[in-house]
Length: 161
Image (tube, rainbow, N blue to C red; front, top):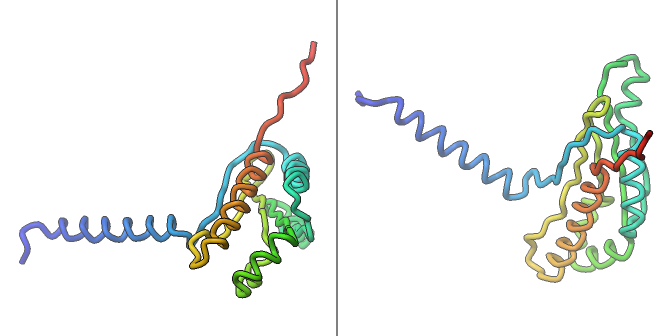
């Protein structure tokens, strides 16, 4: 019998948490997220504006939370999915790795309730075998980060006397 059995539990938990943290950081859940206390409408408008500024075309919007609320669950949180594409990026990406069609179109999501939202964008994989694809993904990820940051940014309210 071991004199200090709790040591084994601590070692096991340390290894497990280390692996779990590494898996999250290595891209299995590679989302860029930021919270905002703006209204849902303001966030969505700012995402749309920022996407057009970065030459991304919104191809569809899914109002998941609204649809569930209409089915009778009025307290359900807001869930919005904005699908986007840039045909120039898409062409280059698909020429380099046709399998990436399975990740298209890209998306930015908003989830939450009344002025407490999380804006999130899955980042594109930057650890590919082709350096040109990695550079392309890196550029697109930089745009997505700017879009999410812009959508969360609280604009100054006009001065009132």
